[in-house]
Image (tube, rainbow, N blue to C red):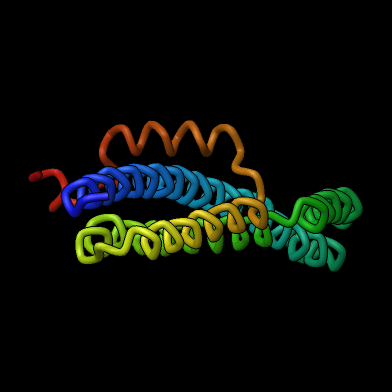
Length: 177
C-alpha cells in the first residue's frame, strides 16, 4: 500500500470514528437531559407528598391535644398522614431523583469527554487504531451507564427531545459555527 493510499484510508477511518463519536455524544445528550428531567419531576413528587405528610402529622398531633383542630378529627388526619407517608416510603421519590440526577451527571461528563475526543483528539492523532480503541472505551462506558441507570420515563424523554430541539443543550460557541 502506498503512502497516499494509507493516508486516504486513515482519513476515511478518522471520519468514521468522528461520526460514531458524534452518535455516542448525541445519545449522551438525550439520555442526560432525560434523566435530569426525570430527577426534577421526582423531586417535585417528593415535595408534593413530603410537605403535606409533615404538616398533617403535626396537625394530627396538635388536634389530638385539642390545640388547633377538634380532637375528633385527629384519627382522620393521622390516617391521611400515614397514607401519604406510606406512599413516600413505597415510591421513594427522593431516591429516584438522586439516581436520575447521578445518571444525568455521569452522562454529561461522558458527553464532554466524547466532545473533546471528537473535536480535538481525533485531529491530533494519526494512530487510527488508538482512536478506534478509545472510541470503543467511550461507547462501552455509555452502554454501562445506560444499563445501570433507571429507565427514563417517556414524558421526560419527550421533554428532553423538545428542549434539545429548541437549543437548550447547545453551547453558544457551537451556534456561531
